[in-house]
Amino acid sequence: MSNIAAVTESTATPEQQEILTATKKALGIVPNLVSTLAQSPAAANAYLAFSGALSKGSLSAKSRELIALAVGEANSCDYCVSAHTYIGTHAGLTEEEVLDARRGTSSDPKRKAALSFIKKLVSERGHVSAEDIEALRTQGFSESDIVEIVANTALNIFTNYFNHVAATEIDFPIAAKLEA
Image (cartoon, rainbow, N blue to C red; front, side):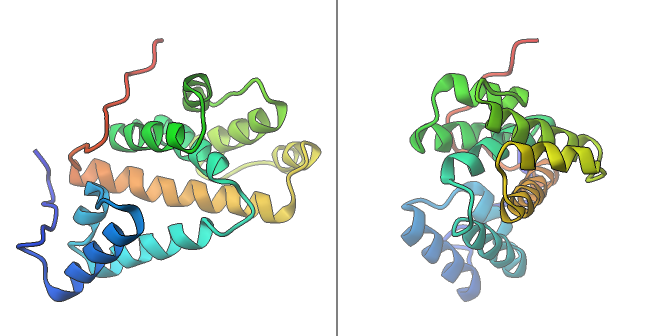
């Protein structure tokens, strides 16, 4: 049972309806995350604007999905892990890449550096060292990439925390728990 109700077409104010309509037009669906965030049009619009701006950045869709998976797993967000497992595989990630991202690792050295950084960024609440940042540069990440890694991590922390508070109903295939 959700702690915060999702906005529906029948309960939406005109401003909320505008959010639902725009989301459906852009994605073909309105995920429960967005319809629940729509209880506050300001919060929903902020999320959509932040996400939209980052989609035009230097990081690929696959990279953004890897970040979402690593952050979602680190924060035990079943909604986000399920959503980004589904979205990630449709963005071209293999099942193994999805599971590795959730574990914060990769067989690819550049991805592994990013995922290790993200894991530390989340666990240390942003307190990373100059050496941690240099490890990203060594793998070819630009200043822009590093800024966007932090921004995408922050966006996903927001959705993780929101889903915990709201107990958002998962409307994607539920991702299996990682084996210990």
